Length: 86
Image (cartoon, rainbow, N blue to C red; front, side):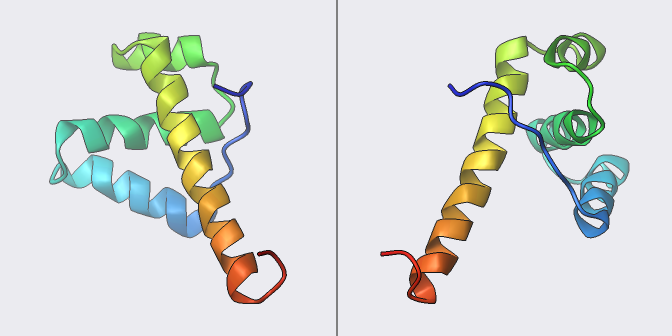
């Protein structure tokens, strides 16, 4: 896994994550991921997030990595769609 990368969330993304947490409708794993992404975006360390939410450091790292991986794939797909990247 790559070194820690910064998670950046815009206002709409933060609101969607907070709503998932407060409504309690999504499965517990989704709520945990929302907590992890919000705190990561706030600059919390992996250790602090894991300790606060009772999960492992590896879970925090994997969650962040998956989020960044999806963003990267979306950006590459967009560049290919507009013909700038093949």
